[in-house]
Length: 153
Image (tube, rainbow, N blue to C red; front, side, top):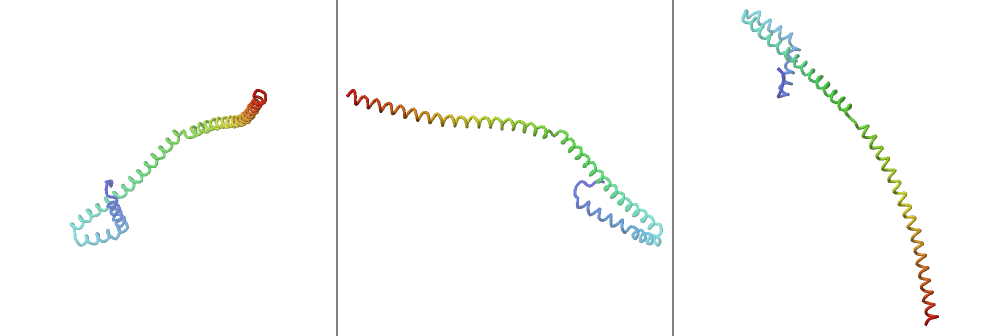
């Protein structure tokens, strides 16, 4: 009989059977002593009690074996699942692909950064040229204004 429900009941029964096993000799001696004086009825009672106690001990041993087998089976199943999971695991391959992609992205970002730096440098140079041309145009305008005022007025 396997325990399926209340674990505490199983525990108390297990403790009871262990105590019976420890005190089996004393119980047996007491029963034998009692049956000697009681005659045939005592002998029958002794056989029934001995059979009952042996059945309890055998049931306990069977339960211990069943629990051990269940634990072993469960451990083996978990080991198989873990091995299967590890075999199916492709995280190393994915990590390698990600590293390669990150290298490409990093290279692309470096190229973009270089282009932005060149654009900033070019913009600064063009800004200086525009300022120079504006100054030149302003000076020309002033010269024409001065020329118009002095020669054509």
